[in-house]
Length: 187
Image 1 (cartoon, rainbow, N blue to C red):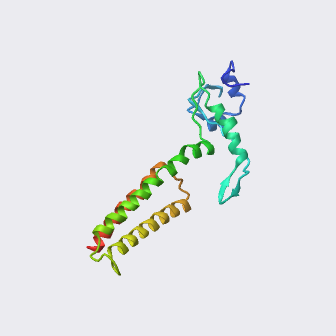
Image 2 (spheres, helix red, strand yellow):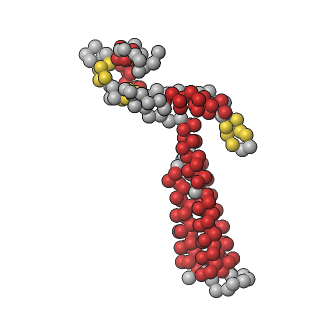
Image 3 (cartoon, rainbow, N blue to C red):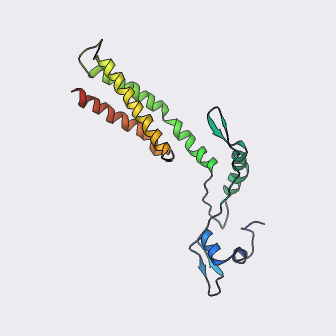
């Protein structure tokens, strides 16, 4: 039976359990004097799937649960209901949304590092070749900036912070700060 097709949704929800149970899954519930649910603004439903993940080529994959989320869960919640508004989050939807965002800026990061190398090499230092040369200083600067970026992402991952599209700006910010610091130190 579908909730949208239910003739008396409140009666169905009132059979769920006690008032405390309903308050745990409903947003802003209103009860009458007999502790019967009268209305609610939202409802939270959670599905927990058995972890069937495995490591393949250094990546953690869960083909069974990902397939279920794609073929059952996402097709169900993406239906346009007449009386219901749905907001959902699944690990599959997270990966689908941010997978392209994470890899989309990699070409720009590479191009910006090349541009910074050329700029630093042309303007930093006095010697063209040898010890203390412009290019040696430019390469050292970019290596240190890259190590700082990788270390920053590593520490954030260790702390359990998830990668988001906002983080894709950080390599550019760190590159700008690192290039500026190289000029401050050298001059």
